[in-house]
Image (spheres, rainbow, N blue to C red):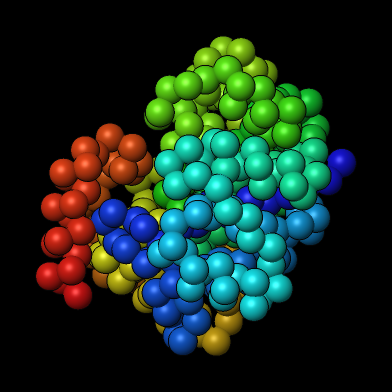
Length: 258
């Protein structure tokens, strides 16, 4: 059973364009994520799934230079992009990671994969319900289920966000894991400039180490909450509900704030 981690990445983010290539301590954010994810022992291959948009050329070149595969697909139909990438790399099990989560913890990824295998379900995650900090999301499904979802749903929301149909349609067996403490309000993802400021402070604190655990980040937040104050006004998963106009407004604010 081949386990392929597909990292969803693109340069055309509305609210923070080019964020995946923004440098932290001299390394693009995507490189830090891939380096951390490569320590996951349950993952057989890591593939970056990006789009055919010309803006992604720099991203693609850098990912390939690092030695990772990169597959191109639709900009907006990310579900189709995932199916294509998974098929090319002969995945039996697909792990969905998004490139705006550079604090992804390989040990947590391994745990979710192991629990998926033990549960014998179509889909398993640590996001439903959300109890882990935003930025540690790990979703695992069988390729068969992913391909079936792509055949069955035509809703733009399902196709843009990859997994809603798997989670919500009632057509698939699902299970999940919850943390023993609800930490869903903590925000460690990068959607906006203030998010980047927070994550940059985390990496700078642990520099030159990049193998710190999510538990160490949690301890850091409790000891130095001021490191994490810049983005605490933002709402989890807001991007899935914001209109294009609202996202563009945020993008202009991000440009003004540097």
